[in-house]
Length: 370
Picture 1 (tube, helix red, strand yellow):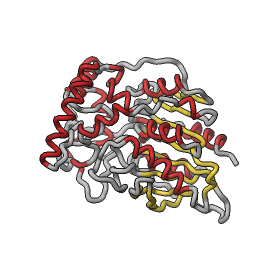
Picture 2 (tube, helix red, strand yellow):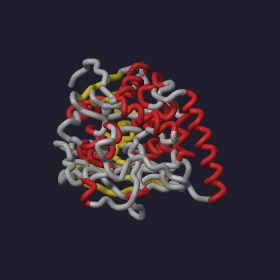
Picture 3 (tube, helix red, strand yellow):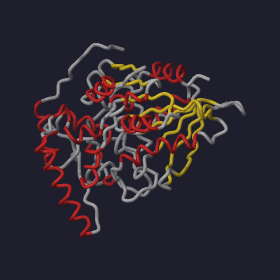
């Protein structure tokens, strides 16, 4: 892994598109939303998943059990509890809570990490955040960062009751937006003993400022006005108005950032539709709730997590690398920022050949030791 400083190139039209999306009231948060109905074969014809992409990895070395538990809002959180096969009865193991990318579900990226880490001797719990996947919460796809944060502490509550888990040795791994939620939880929950993030997005910063601070204060205020108008319309109609993020089909005009998310969320590489939902209902969010992220500041007081360790992992080509850099800069330590050479943001969702498994294993082994 390299620690050499690198500034990724974001094409001018991509940056302009980010600004346009923001001005139009579309948070660039994960840009993972889906539009339209079922994907026709023609829509993904010619697309080949990159080397090592293995989102739907199935391990024969672990046991997976669906579990449900309540958070402090009395909402049911659903997760997959993943344990190494052959656990000795009566032996308490270290555990890791795994959070999925913003707008995704546990079957997208999280279960790959949960299984790979369980193979190394950890009990892992991949959760669906409230309002997403199989967890409770109405309306669906609501943006509620405080409740997302609470889900990580609720997961610790649950793990602490399990006979196979040592409640004094619980860590957390947040992917994309869940990196920020995991840090937010760790600031107020000292039971999270080791905190790692992968391809982290600061959902607050990106909603306030856009990528690379491309959004002006005037644009931010215009977004708030649009969100308020939409909220009035939703109250009058009783129906939520959902944003669309990605094109039904990526074409020559599709900018690099949009295409990166499309290649995961709009192709068989990463499509995961929760029971009772449709493809068109996944990922998308209401602008009237999206703006709540403007009040979300996960890196404020991040230094108070010390002396618990922090590990930030990002691709050196990632359009989102600024968020890992920001967190690393203000964290007190012990802390480490690890660049994965040649990797983009979404690459670390599922490209098993690029994800630094040895580093993650060593980090949790050291800091969740008995």
